[in-house]
Amino acid sequence: MFMMFTMSTIIILISLIMMLLASILSKKSFYDREKNSPFECGFDPKCSARMPFSLHFFLIAIIFLIFDVEIALLLPVIIIMKYSNVLIWLTTSMFFLWILLIGLYHEWNQGALEWTN
Image (cartoon, rainbow, N blue to C red):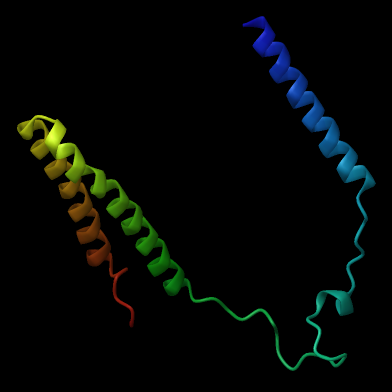
């Protein structure tokens, strides 16, 4: 136990020393308007390169990722069905599906699934 504590302390200490040395020895960047602006053949840019991002599109993408993870969690349920008790499997599966359906209803009720307003 003491050996593991000593090794973890040494590793953390070496990591902190390396990060400190990297920040001290790193090349300092000077912020300049010309350097921070996008390069368009040497001319001033016509418009901002940073376009505004649609928050609604971001929320739809997050909801898609959540449901994608939920599908990945549902796939092993089919394989487990052979090796488990049918009553326990059915209860667990229905409980998990019920939670997913409540979440879907909540998102639908809040209007998060509507693309146009």
